[in-house]
Amino acid sequence: MSRQSEAENGTAATEAIPDCPHCQKPLPLCVCDGITRIENRVSLLILQHPQEQDRALGTARLTAMHFANAVLKIGLSWPSLSKALGRPVADPSRWAVLYLGSAKVADLDTKRDIVAINRKGEVEDDQRAILQDIEGIVLLDGTWSQAKALWWRNAWMLKCQRVILGPSRPSRYGKLRREPRRDGLSTLEAAAMLLSSLEKRPDIAETLHASFERMLTKYREFQSAQPAAAPKPRPKRDYRRRRRA
Ligand SMILES: [Zn+2]
Image (cartoon, rainbow, N blue to C red; front, side, top):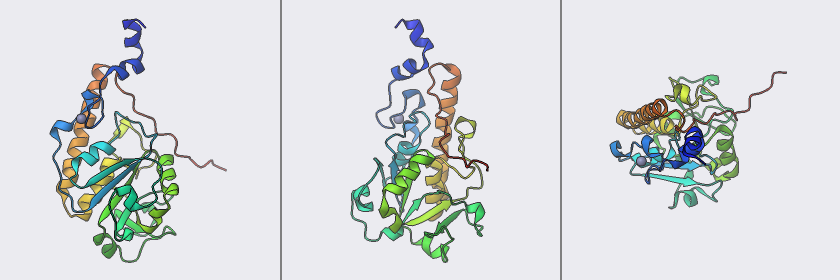
């Protein structure tokens, strides 16, 4: 392939850009240098679907890199929470799994933005006591259907506390990556919301959002400087909309 045709071919040009060995993003999008380390009390486990390959705009690895107490695993299923985490867990019910599924905070009778729900999708009785007792968070990283696959393939998640989020503002991705639901957030934003709230530490959200904004700024700069080479945002279109009868 000639140089010119390679330049015209966005995919080839993208593949020629080396990745940062730490965050595994294309180097022009790396924000590793400015990461402020967070000592977190509530543990974080991020399970990434193996087909989630949004190198440019994905946030799972970047999120995990911020926390002293975080584990990122890539795969489809694990036999238990402790196997996924790589250490024993005394009581999985003190771990919260964020899984929206068909549940929506807006449909529930609550003013909270983090809601613990039961297996029937109803609001649990003592929200405050449940959330105060949470010692770890599990986030599912991928598209809507990938998160659904992770949820259904890991039966141990039923022993954990399911939570859903009703964020007061939509995702900071804006037009770069349209979330199919208004309450859909990036993995980084979900971690920011949950950990800063459970630990009552607004600085956690501030630190994560600052990194996210830097990443998005780098993406936009790169996109305007080299439109052909910029990694394309992945359209999130696999959320199945119900057909109107
Ligand atoms: Zn990096």
